[in-house]
Image (cartoon, rainbow, N blue to C red):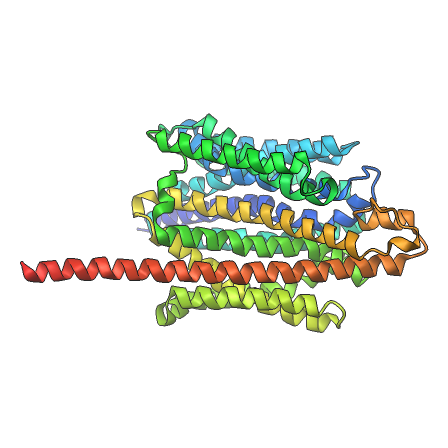
Length: 506
């Protein structure tokens, strides 16, 4: 009996060690999404001399590759081995970080960011698959809940860790620091996690390339609009190309016997609404993160570390309130909870816009409001996506959630960054010697170093407009999502009632 207890304790300890390893890997790749925003002011003033659109690409290149490849990377793990793909992903992540750290120009930086995004895409789905395989069935719900929390905590760790590293040194230190961490994680995975069985899964390379190209084309159109003009050949051509490539992707997946992401899924109203809801939540969150990091440093004079700490009020509801959300959904219904969530996120973003010239305490209150909205939205939308598909398609639901989250993040950064750039140029006082082509604070200050306050005021005004526009977008799309969910629920009830009536008539 004693031997049996020891054996059970040993198994439990091993499973806990695997959980810790997987959580650290997850925090690494998700935290890196947030930490780069803190480095934007240093990158803007660096010897790379990036334009406003190039700054957006430095942030977004990682997220786009991450978003577009997370589902095929999971399929690759199923096919050739999840542990092997997880290990490869961590090493690719480290290699990309080294390339970015040593970049002498923007082009090399973007290559490094794209390679790091490829590594992250390999890590996230296969980390979860390794965890599930290594955990006993009775412990899996707890392990998955802890892993999900780790993916949310990643943003907090990214802000705190990134702030500390950037306080100590240049932007290069941020990339140089994550490379050895990724290598150590790879060693930990190699020594401490088991192998799992392989499954025959189609990779659909053509579909992956079409989706990635369509996303890149869309973001090129969005980010280049302020600099090239919205009617320019590049911008119009990018939007047209995105539409054509998206149509080609849909056509390819519809014809495939085993598509990676079946477009038919989006004919399910509840799934369509919940997926769009997840996308728009991350659109608002990460669009705000991109703006907030520079706004606090430029507008309030915060240090990088202070900026990382200043976002903490937004995380308090996530830490304290997540456990209560299932009870709220059970009592009030998912639609009501999601509707309140979007309303709070929108109000919080608009409140931040009005509070830019007020004390940080007021700013922090609005951060808490946004945090409550996000806390209500994420678990509820996750449950809606999972509940809209049969249990045997749980992997599809997980991949869809990851894709919509990262695509929302990329779009949020691109859209709010584009609005900010356009509005900053509009508000900038061109009569004080600034360069009309200036689209970043660094460029404007270089052209008019004696007009620091005027340049910062223009930036803050642009940020205020951008926040108000994004708040309105979140509110409008949120209302459409709740309407769609209401319609789908009523359709389901009609079908169910008709079926019940038919049974009674028999």
